[in-house]
Length: 163
Ligand SMILES: CC(C)(COP(=O)(O)OP(=O)(O)OC[C@H]1O[C@@H](n2cnc3c(N)ncnc32)[C@H](O)[C@@H]1OP(=O)(O)O)[C@@H](O)C(=O)NCCC(=O)NCCS
Image (cartoon, rainbow, N blue to C red):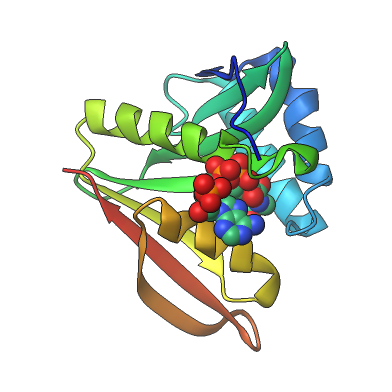
């Protein structure tokens, strides 16, 4: 697929919430319980974007929000950051939106003194595209906790060093 022309990455704001919720609700990988937690985290950010510990960037094209990433410094660490959520609108996948969002988040993390980025994901077959995505962007699996999410569903932690 072609990369999207005119893709803009900017900080998320209250007006973006319906579009972000729509992306979460239509992403088949996410369970309803995960969407609830993603909304709580989003609300935390929207209430206090500067001090919540969460950062949200949205990808916008032709005035439509087509993806978002949520990340923040990992509590109780020195310069380690977590990517908590990243998703693109289902009909716009594989157009470079995810990698652009991640690259901008990584640049912001680096500018804030971050040295290590972690992202957790599932070992389930329906997360294979997600794992491919992270690997393609320079992330490596550094830990696996068997049966973490459920029996047969391991937690994988991907890492990228940027310092
Ligand atoms: C993971 C996700 C954010 C990737 O966003 P995207 O905009 O579709 O991905 P990009 O177009 O930027 O892809 C960048 C690279 O990742 C890899 N990749 C992405 N999707 C892939 C897929 N379905 N199969 C194989 N590789 C894939 C490719 O190497 C791709 O580069 P290429 O297209 O030049 O080959 C998106 O697919 C998504 O929303 N997935 C569901 C939600 C999710 O699992 N989020 C992460 C957990 S919080």
